[in-house]
Amino acid sequence: MATIAAPKLTATTDITTISAADFGKLTVADLDSLSTAQASALTRAQLGALTDKTVPAIFSKLTNIDPAEFVGFSQLAVSVLPIASLTIDDIAALSANQFKALTPAQVGTLSKDQLAIISADQLGALATGTAAKPGQLDALTVRNLSGDSFAMLLPTQIAALNPAQLASLGALQLGALTADQAGALTPT
Image (cartoon, rainbow, N blue to C red; front, side):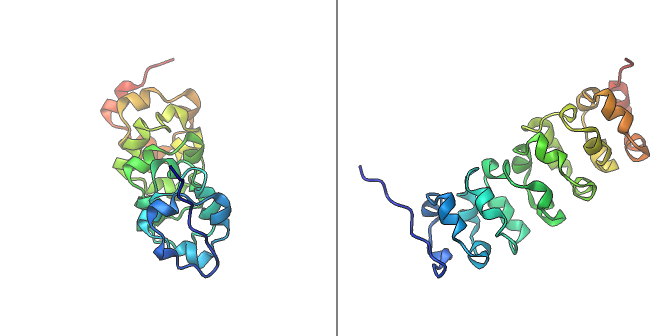
């Protein structure tokens, strides 16, 4: 059976004419040849065809992408995004399933403003995703959770906080601590 080749890209290729299936066959070298205008014209389906190898090659060219288009990224693609460079709107547009794919290193690069807008669903996904439990997040990340986000942590997650994380908690997080969360804390 013959392998179907990826489409040939040039600076004048109308990117919208390439199917998502064909777009998924493009190599890093192919994507490097895209102009910023072409990259910004990608469809949700094309974005969904990006892989962990191709996202980094194209991400810097996605300057005008609508935050809603990030929902097209697969979990694997999201796991290699330079997450700290996303805007607050971009972070808000990520689905819970996409948040589940974030690595601890990615979560650790989120700014205070980015952490403050994490939704309850996104935070819940962090608890079950590859970023997993707050015990894997550094103290600065835990300290920068908004009060509302901190209040969404499960008692089991609070119990998993390490001494450095507990020591880093500020008035905002301590004020948001629920009775169930406080009950999960054990003296050491």
